[in-house]
Length: 486
Image (cartoon, rainbow, N blue to C red; front, side, top):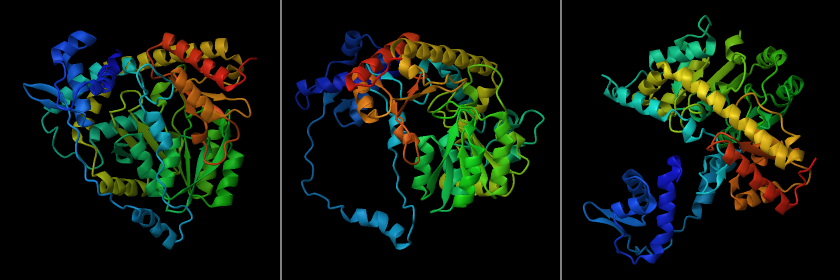
C-alpha cells in the first residue's frame, strides 16, 4: 500500500468486509490485521478510527473493535422544503442580479482523493514523496515547545513571518515592509478575504478565461458576477481587459500571472506594466494570485506584479501550501494603502487570526537550511514528472500532445480536445480505466470555446505511474471515440 494512503486503503478494504460480520461481532485483533496486510499498528489504528467515525465500527479499549449494531432511526421525516425559499428569498427581495450560489463542485473535484488503484491526474497538491514531511514534523514539534507558542498572536500575524513574506515578495531592497503583509490561512482564505473586501455583492469581477474554478466559486458565493477576459500564450490580452473594464464598470480583476492555472502561461514582460496601468486608469484593483511561485522548473522567475506596482493597485496573494502540504494552510495578503485595513478587518471578523503554532512552525520551516534544498527537490521532481507526461502523451496520444505547451512551472498540462468531444464522457471513461482527470468546463466563467482536459503531474509516485496513467487515458479515448493520432 502507498505510504500516504495506506490507512485509507485498509479502511476501504475493511469496509467491504464488514458485511460478512454480524452486528456486534468482533473483528480480528489489531495484531492479526497487521500480520495479514503487512502494515504498521499505526495504520491499523487509523483505519479503524476512520470506520468508527463513519459509524461502522465500535472500538472498546482493551477489548478490540466490533461491527456497529444497526441503529434504529426516527421514522418521522423532517420537512425541510421551506429552506429552498428561505435560502433565496432575500436575494429575490433585494433584486440581486447575482444570487448567492455556493457551488463547490469544481473545487471538490480537485480535492477528492481517488479510490485505491486510481492514478490521480486531478490533484492540486504535491505527492507525499515530494512533501517535506520530516521537516514539517520537526518544525511543529519545536514550535509547540517554544515559550508563548500557544498565546494569541498579533492579529495581522507574527512580525518575523510578515517580514519574511515582505522580503520574499518585494526583494531584500524592495518597498514592501511587514506593515504591508497580513498573514492568512492559505491562498483560498486570502482570495475569499480579498473578494469580500474589494467587490460589493452584485458587482462584476473580471477573471482570466480560463481561470481557477475556486476563484469562480468564491466570487459566486459572494454574490459577484465573474466576467471572462480571454488569454493567449502571453497571458491576459490587455486590449480585451481594457474593453472589459469599460463595458462592465468592474473594480476588480483576478489573475494568475505566473504559471497560470490551468494553462501554465506566464504573463509576458511587455504586458505586466500595461495590466497595472489599465486597472489603475479604471480605478480598479488587481488581485494577483501567486500560488505557484515556488513550483518553478527552470530558470529565473519574473518578480511579482505587486513588487513593480507604483499605485497600490495590486493586492497580492502568496501561499506556502502548494510547496509543502495541503494541511499547512498559511499564506499572506500583501497590499498598500487603506485597502490593507479593510482586508485586516474582514479577516478579524471572519476568523480572528491564524493560529500561532501554525505561524511559529511555518517560520521555523522557511528559516531552516533545509528549505532551499526542499525547493530544489520540488523543482527537479516536477520537471521530471512534467517531461515524463509530455513524453507519454507524445507516444500514446500524439494528436493531443501537439496541443500542449510545456509549462516552465506549476504542476499541470492543459490539453485541447478535438471539437465535438464529450468531456464528461471522456472523464468518466478515464475513471473507469483507473485514472482521474479534470474536465475543462469548470475553468470557464461562461461558455467554453472548446473541450479541454487538465492533467496534473504532481500527485503521483513518479514517471512509471505517469506513463501508466497516460496509457489508461488512451484506452478511455479509444472507448469514447476521441481521435488522438497525428
